[in-house]
Image (cartoon, rainbow, N blue to C red; front, side, top):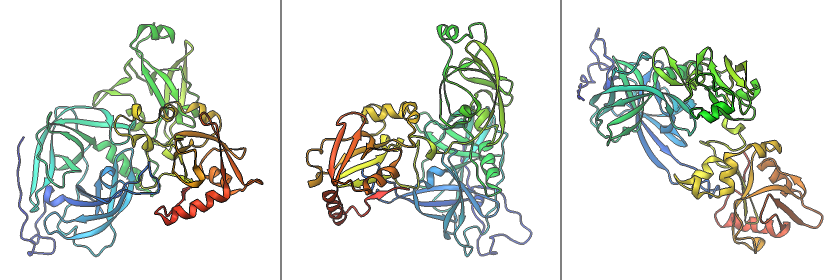
Amino acid sequence: MHFFRTFLAVLAITSAGLLPGQAQDVSPENSIVRVNATLQQYNFLRPWEKGAPTPRRGLGPVLEGNRVLVTSELVVNSTYLELEHPSSGARVPAKIVGLDYEANLAVLEPANTNSEVFEGLVPIELDQSTKAGDTLDVWQIEDNGDGVSTSVDVLRVNVGRYFIPGSVFLLYQVKGSLQARVNSFTLPVVKNGKLAGMLLSYSSKEQTASVLAAPIIQAFLDDLEDGDYQGFPNLGINVTQTLDETLREFVGIDDKEGGVFLRSVAKDSSAEKAGLKKGDVILAVNGKAIDSRGNYTDETYGKLSFSHLVRGAAAVGDKVTMDIIREGKPEKIEVELIRKAPADYLIDPYMFDRGPKYVIFGGLIFQELTLPYLESWGDEWKTRAPFKLVHAQANPEKWEKEGRDKLVFLSNVLKTPSTLGYEGINSAIITKVNGKSIANIKELSAALAEVPEDGIHKIEFTDFPKIIYVEDRASKFVNQQLQQYGIGQLQRLD
């Protein structure tokens, strides 16, 4: 590891900080800006509330057109964004002009043009040539505006998680010793003066880091060019390795090499639309053989997960050909790649920049089940969150076959005159309200808005307590009281 510092020329020389005829080099102090963010997360257990505002600081490389690249994790749930010149301290409010949480990337622009933030700064180009054995530089900025560059060595290139669980892309695994600084949440990683990636995580104990790879950045920027961002495609499958000889014999590939077993196929996904089925075995994608661990041999990087052939080497609308084994017989299937948006899943895999959907009626709190709700129980949510909801998240097929758009459940019960006797009920999945099947929170709200002839709402569940009854007039009176005691919004449907 080595460090170097380069000091800025006197800013008063010219408005750009340069003498006439001088060229300015790409460097930490010349090609990155500080990004200041104020974030405010939603509370998924108390869906009408938001958490306290929290600050976050990072560094973003300057792109052509006074744009700044950052990770989406830096700006998630942001209520205010600001760009700051690394040495002069000039600041300007910023806005997001491109965002992809799955690829963990965002592009910012100044919210107005009357700014000195970009004076004297030089845009940086991308370098997509990184491979194992290369040396990269991680750029940082001191508090006084001086640039710091730390060398790291690329140990290997593989595929791994960026930000969203289950969303994996090309990664550079690097090793080197980095110093912690206050604006180090997001850091550019450079090769020969060009942007090679963005630092995602760093282990001070192991002195290793994961770097978001430049080919993914380039694909993200290319997609933004026409103003119609499509995102990265997904197959919508879960696979199992076929290392076990008994499994290989069972699925009819004991006389073949490699292959992965399809454990499940998501509804309305690229895979389902193409006709892939649970139980199929994928042997090759676009002619590239898939081994029993799910890897193929890439010409540049060596062994990589075959997911890179979909989420790195292809785009939405592209077609890939798969060689499969179905019930012991070989077939070829052409898959047109689409991106299934998070809101199109029965259970949203992530929710940012928007609050959880809910309805409060007389003290009964109804919600649509999301993964962030389950993750509210902490890192061990799979064992700590309500079992029936965790099971539903892992096995959505049953509910999808029933025609549900979302899984609506009674998350909790506030103690009110309208809910006496029901205080202990929680995590109960709803089937019907007043005899009408409930497929999403809007249908629940509409059903409760229609007053039954006897004024009593009948709410049915999949299991305990099976049925509860609530009085319409009393519940609406309680709603008025709840608004007076701090719950200003009794429902969020969008």
